[in-house]
Image 1: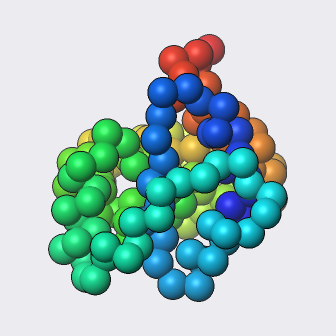
Image 2 (image 1 turned 30 degrees about the vertical axis):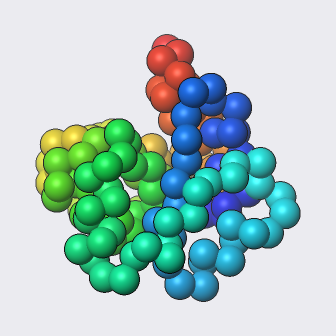
Amino acid sequence: MPFAAWSPFSEVANTEWFSLQKGAARNQLSQPGCALKPHDLTDDIHDFADTAALIKQLDLVISVDTSVAHLAGALGKPVWVFLPASYDWRWMLDRDDSPWYSGMRLFKQTTLGDWAEPVARAKAALMGNEP
């Protein structure tokens, strides 16, 4: 999921965004094209225990299917996960929740490569404007 796809979240009032993204993908934070400007916490992350400690301080984790999403789920944190249209078996068909993590909500692509639609659904949910 390209970082620019997260831009609509910049329009959500009264929110602060934090990035836990490590590795090469962290470089996306400084690239133009995304209106969302999260606080980069990665300098404070030295191991997975640091990641867990930071997650515990957040109200909600929004992620793609990564170890951060699974850790948030295992910690019992509310976590929303974006999944591509071709997701794997563990996310099951016709569900927007997970039997593995009670606080997890899934936002699946309905069209391969189109992140605008699941992002719009998540943004509406975050703003309390779900249909």
